[in-house]
Length: 131
Image (cartoon, rainbow, N blue to C red; front, side, top):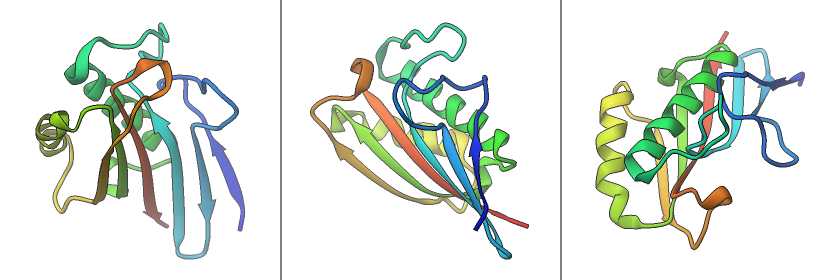
C-alpha cells in the first residue's frame, strides 16, 4: 500500500514529531489519517481565544488538510474529539451542524485534563476518498 505524507501551509505546522496527515491508497480508494488539529492560526501559530474561536479554527485547519489530501468534509468518516470541558459539547454540535453535510460521520467526544498549547479542543479526523 503506497502511503503519502500530506502537508499544507494552510494548516498549522506540526508542533512535534508527526505529519499533518498520512494518506494510504488501495485499489478501492484512499484513507487519510489526520493528526489532531488544535485552534492554532496557521499564519501566526498563535492559539485563538476561547472555545468558539478555537473550534472554528480547528474546523478550518481540518478542512485545509482534507483539501490538501484531495477530499472534502463530505469524505470524513470519523471524528475523534477531545475537549477540556464537556460543557462545550452543545456548542461543538452546533458547529458540526453548520459545517458538515448530512449524513454526519461517526464521532466520539471525550473530556481530557489538558491539551497541547493549552488548547480547549482538539479533533482527529479519518476520511475515505473513493477513486
